[in-house]
Image 1 (tube, rainbow over the protein chains, first blue to last red):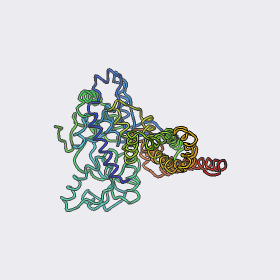
Image 2 (image 1 turned 90 degrees about the vertical axis):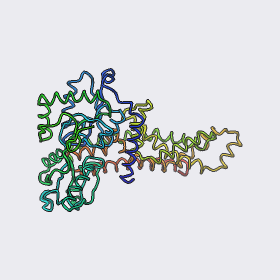
Image 3 (image 1 turned 180 degrees about the horizontal axis):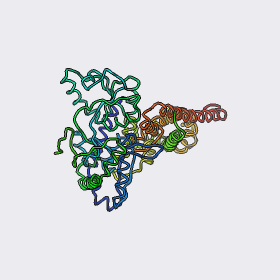
Image 4 (image 1 turned 45 degrees about the vertical axis):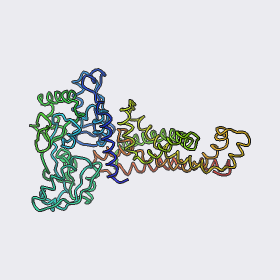
Length: 280
Length: 216
């Protein structure tokens, strides 16, 4: 089956799931009454969430551990691939996605977001020593790797207009299910650059400094936050209160330093769309 | 190269793949037989339902079907945990394909034998279990085993609902090591081993049947 067909089906299911069950998300009162909250996390998204020998690790897991300490109810966790997380939240199967979900216009239509937990502006990574690419301008006509349905895919129109302003054009785009495969293809010279958020790329560079080199930021400034079902205000407020507390105590900053290797000192206290635009 | 702990982790994923696939196969083969019986039976509504079911399930990609079962069924009040949902979805999927195999075998069954059975006063039910089934399960065996191997190969679809199978383990490992090749090559070798064992078992059974009945 071709990838785009699969994607189309996934979108159809996603929409169907929202349609039939938008009333199913539990409010905070219902969560307290039943005694547990269900959150979903990813398993292949270092440094935010990843799994080593069956043990979940990363920035969001550290935050989740703090959340568990501060809630009067149990927090159950389900670990699944990105492609299953947003449909699960939108359909009310999970009360929240405790993952670094990039806040985009498209997602804001079907989901609510907490305050940002990290910046997530896109950037590009190239092979170490590839002298053809010095700035964004030289990405013209190059073959780029992105994640299917990911924020790296959605930043492409911005990149295209940036390239056009200097007389360039967008080259071939290859979509991947997981970034590790895109990095492999970058190393294999099937790609000239891979687009991903600045945090994940910083982690990649710290792991593989001999192979890859970080490039410039691409597109508008954007943020990553936890996602909640659209309109489930009580759960969003609850998670925001938790995050505000951890931010005020300095714990958030400490975890950023430990896990993300970058500190974002002035994250906004409400979810902002790319380019620092307010939600309406 | 993979570390020993990583390899053991990968084998854990292989265990999940085998467990889910075997349970789905065990449920899917009798379910398929029921579907085929329904489609070749005398009740029109049941015939129509079974035909619609197998057309629908065979047309829907496994990943989508998996999401429908896991995220869609709670809307109808049926909330399954990931593991049972994975087994359920794969069983319903393979049942549709098994149903076609059983149906072909039933359609091909020599009419003369059925007429002879009826002449001896056997009911439809008795003649099915005493005459038809003992022969068609042997003739369907190679096709059923083929469908089993296909099922094992579509089983990575269960990862979408959070069941960590062999392929997902390989992906988790490659996300951390940034090197997909060692993990995926190891996973491919393990899949090969599982399928080789399955096919060898089927061959052994076919040979035994051939010796006992003169044909498979």
